[in-house]
Length: 360
Image (cartoon, rainbow, N blue to C red; front, side, top):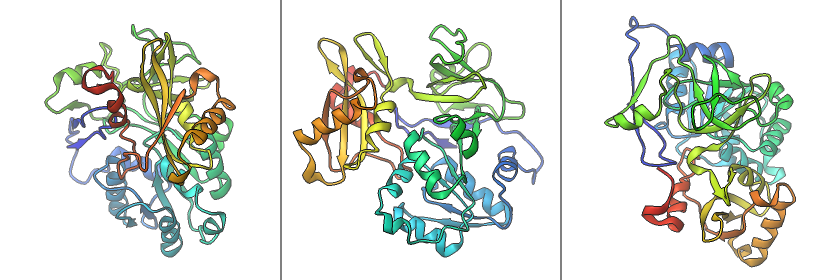
């Protein structure tokens, strides 16, 4: 039994309905690895993330079962990852966007130092990737970057390759399994382009799931049609490509306007003086909530009012003003998991306290 990451609340144990297939049957997920990503006994797979996370665990086990080779990092270091690709002639890898950001912030001469020619498939998932970050990665590594969107619960999945992404920047792809639906708060289906909660129809042959010792949370994750959600917000375009806006629990409501903090995070993380950033709502007596950022600068010596003003203006040059932080605090390090996922709720709780935060 695997647990969710706990980025929006307490980690939840996820119990699958076992398919009861004959011993030795290849799981459907492994078929996707071979059909979509071309993994086989010749694959050399680099895992820069810890194995208690569902995706690295599954990919390492599957690579081994296929007869390939796994190169598993004990902890992520951006230059060390490049060195390992060269040393072991890595063919496949899997990343989270934070790792892309860390590698892109290496000096140009360091990035050019390593031979990455063996690398033919760089998979990423776990969090939406800022458009500019992914564009730079494709320019650096070539059109080998492939993305999927799913969750440990396994109720559905999407996929997009580099070529389709360049035509649909920001998308996480089209469904690999059953249809996707975007619903409003009342369960009504929304048309293309309108943001709502992402729901997946059950896919044939996919195991069901329940949350361990949490019947209420399990019920909340399904509707009366059997569709399932983890609470992500997004929209579909006319061609069925899915775009994620943020987690429902992270949405900011300021003066009655819904704001998705991921947009500001995606902008601020590209600033050369920013190493890491989290954006969320904090209490405001007039607006209910206001947009706030906590930034880990490249150099803590830069932290202060001047950099705060610079970052707010930088964000406003890219986004509508109401989407941008009205204030910025600085931290020497943000609370990220070794998987790269941000514990945003720990930051929010400092401002909201135990009883007023909307995160559950």
